[in-house]
Amino acid sequence: MSTQPSNEPSVTDRHLLSTQAYGTGRHLAARQSLYQWQTPRHDLPGLVVEELARVRGAVADVGCGNGKFVQRIRTQRPDLTVLPMDVSPGILAGIAGAVAADVQQLPIVDRALGAVLAMHMLYHVEDQARAVRELGRVLAKGGIAIASTNSRTDKRELEDLWRRAAGDVLGIPEGPARVQLSARFTLEDAPTILGAVFEDVRTIPLPGVVEVTDPEPVVAHLASYEAWADKMGVPFKETIARARERVEETVQAKGAFRITCLGGILLCSGAH
Ligand SMILES: C[S@@+](CC[C@H](N)C(=O)[O-])C[C@H]1O[C@@H](n2cnc3c(N)ncnc32)[C@H](O)[C@@H]1O
Image (cartoon, rainbow, N blue to C red):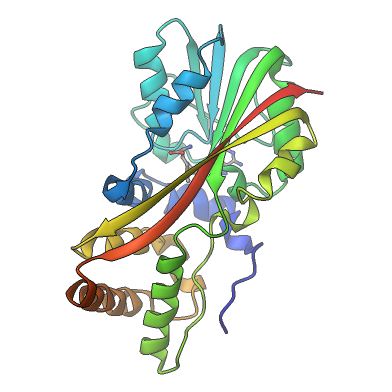
């Protein structure tokens, strides 16, 4: 009872994504906030801006979410035209010029952009091959696509914590794994998927360790999966309450709760 199918259909369920998971930016912000406690801290928007150094013209941020990247690019590269796009209209509130659009069918003419971003979003897309073709199609000659995701080993301690807490609730040694968001597009698999369209795909791994002495950031991260609560095979709130106790116990015994993180950026060029 310990593994979850990696192609869990609810992870790509458009209705669930656009109403519950990303109907607002609330859950995404809770998930992102865990990285405040990571060492080293990686400034992802800053890294993206660096990679855009030679890009001119227009840049689309597809699956832009709460606009973290859009905001930074607009501030640091006012010469670029930034097109924020996301399939969840609710999360776009407050992002100027944002358009509701699906990466599998972008409302952009061929070869129009200097760059396109697909940050932590391709794992939510049903037809990834089609999405990657779209990313290639909209790029002008010499244009770049930048994607990001997590390794299959990312935050393993959080997965263990969930399974043990779920086990406690169910009265068994280990409960079911929680829904794995990035499992459909891991840092390890991404180069092959992107390589179907891009000649050159370079991975920049971004490892780090989160260390907390207060359970709240961990609890907030676990709770950000609320949209998938009924897919977890265990009472969601009770499991989170038990996870909180387990984190407290670890902090008392070891001084901190540690989570090993591995995310990364994929730089793609040479679309064919
Ligand atoms: C994990 S969030 C990432 C947001 C942002 N890119 C970031 O890295 O902070 C995933 C986003 O992708 C969007 N999304 C999911 N499927 C999509 C699709 N087929 N086309 C466009 N956006 C999609 C979701 O609505 C959500 O806002």
